[in-house]
Every structure is written in C-alpha cells, then in structure tokens.
Image 1 (cartoon, one colour):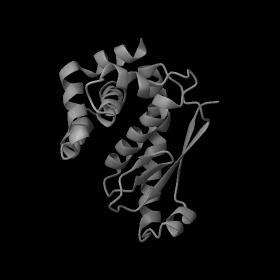
Image 2 (cartoon, helix red, strand yellow):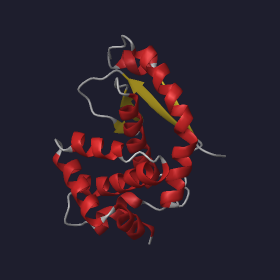
Image 3 (cartoon, helix red, strand yellow):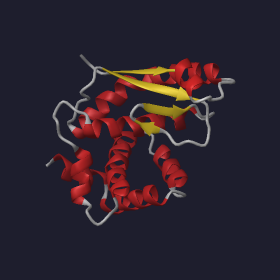
Image 4 (tube, one colour):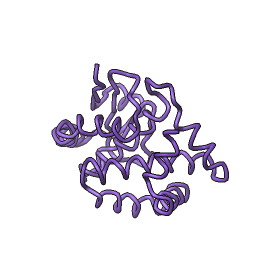
Length: 182
C-alpha cells in the first residue's frame, strides 16, 4: 500500500496544550486543498530520490496555529502559516526526517549522515541530508527551486540549519545523496 499523509487538526492536541485555534480550520482547509494536489508527487519523488519507502501506510500530520514552538517530526506537528507553500515545505522537511529513520529498507540515513559528517554536531549532520533531499525534491521533482532559496534565507537565523545548507551548497545535494545511498 502506498503511504498516505493525513493532515488533520486535533481538538485533543489543541486542548491539551491550550493552543489558540482562531482561524485554524480555514487555514487547514486551504492547506489541505493544496497539499492533496502534491501529496503523491512528493511521496513518489522522495522514493525516486532516496530509494527509500516509508514503513508506515499512514503518516499523520497535525496542523496547529503559529506559536513560538518549532515544528517537530514525531509526531509531525506543523504550524499553518499564512503562506501555504511555506507550510508544505515544512511538512516535506518533517516527512524527510521520518523517511530517513523509518523506512522499509531499514536503512537509517540519520545514522549514516552523522557518520559521514562526524566533525559536525548531530543536528547539523542530520539536516545536511534533510536539506539535500529537500533540494533534490524541489529542483528535480516539484520544479520550484525558488522555495529552496526561501528556505535557506529563513533558516539562516538558526546556526545548525544554516551550516547544513552551507555544506549542501558546497558539496552539492546529489553528491550527498549518492554517499548516503552507498
């Protein structure tokens, strides 16, 4: 069975963490409309780029209103930004994290990349592979390299992410992916 991504708003999550929900349903509906158009292309593209397949048949993505917390990859929780393309980029980022450690091939790219880039801290090393895969997806599959430039600019204020992008740009995303495939 092909993996399905289930975007959802969780009343339980919002209540438990006392998250603000004003306007969330409308943002969610707009996001979901755009995401379903790209979901299959994203899933197939990640497989084509990495050779990895998601282990799970369903991956839940919980959508919340923007707050001061970062997105997380397990469970996947992302903020519904006003910019739908930016939110989709964040969903892709978190999906890549999942694919790197939870795949049918039982090939942990999260561990591999830390071994390849021992001189970097683990957070930077892991994001080298996330960013390399993300750039391949946006350039080769989604044909939207401008989204990568936006991500590089936004991530510039976070040292580990900035360093990871610097390495990806220096070495090239395909070179890094090829090393991880070995």
